Image 1: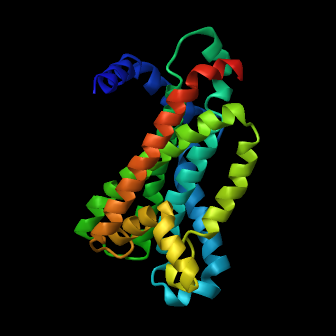
Image 2: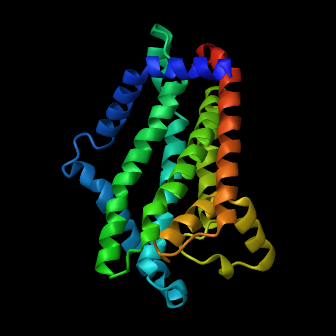
Length: 262
């Protein structure tokens, strides 16, 4: 408990740095871009349109409000993939600063995860627009979308910390991670329903794929407009907590060796 209090106090001592790093990441993302932050809205809309055209012939007939179904899955998975990809370079990319002064090393990874999360929240505007255009009814359950979003954030932070420290020692991990994310995407019901999968694969995806829980809960509150199955919420929270612990412990154990490898 005392160690936790000390870590918390250390975080608040560097809170200004944390906020500045988030602002820096957000500014760099759309630097010299004509439309700037509007791309946070336009990019998911454009991808949704392309995916709707490509996959509509196969899945649209069985899935009502198919564009929203696509967008809800795409927004969450894109955040996880983009944030973890940025985490891979969060330590090595700030090597010059880490060598010159003492800064809590996790700040760079955490700020990157958070700036990408803020960008994802901005992207939710595209979901509001599509729901209005397609006349999908907003229900009171929409106010609960913070539950899957918070669970996803915690899960991604844990995964990001784990990948960040791993990439310091194994630089090839960023190439492996790209391939892994592609396979993960196709094993996540983004553009198809989970019932489309054969029996054993369906069980694996619906029980061992963390993104399945977060996307399913999010869709329950938005696309379906009803309450989510409580066990999914519990499982998603447990997975997020376990991943955060793994990420924090692995990062803490290796952080003092970073300076020898960056």
